[in-house]
Length: 91
Image (cartoon, helix red, strand yellow):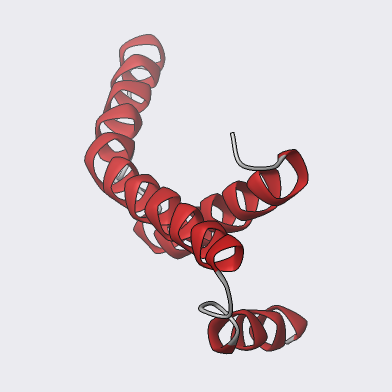
């Protein structure tokens, strides 16, 4: 619940100055890149892992790609990038 409150506060103050706008932009760009990479490469890695396990165990497993974790990956990328840029300055 506090995550939603923090995100709401950040949404309404995102264009208050250039520094905050650059932080928000960096976080949004990182979240977009993370979700695109997640949707492109996570199924491949999951298939490789299942293929490796089925080759060694002799049994096939069901497809269990965690596509619903994409939202978590995007939020994590946003907050990590936002806070890293905030703590280290504008590099």
